[in-house]
Image (cartoon, rainbow, N blue to C red; front, side, top):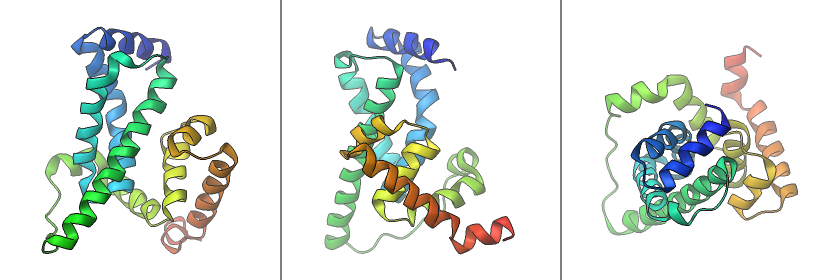
Length: 180
């Protein structure tokens, strides 16, 4: 969907229009969920729900265009993902380890095997590289927006992205899949 239409949907959503918000959600939720799968693992759905609740609550305060909204959205998602990771570590210390359950059919249909495989490989990168690769390469944010989300300088984002991509290029599973 063109940025102009998404900016119009953003303005409508800020005025309380459910259709405008639905357009934003349909457009961005898959990318938010993929990013949070790398950041928060099995708790990505919870972090995504918290992200959208935060967006709904504060959307009327947001001032900017669609590109600015994407940066704002992923900054919120990052904070909610970090919160989920903290919650996971506290829960893990006080409770029995959770048992893994089979993914639900909706998750399998939405993501597919190739996407899940790729996200798993990216999640194995050091955290700063994984986030930089997800935001810059997978989601397609620019360096300045990514730097703002991560609280880093643009040069640090470029370096983390480059190192992450280099590490991915030499990953044995990727080399095997490419037939190298």
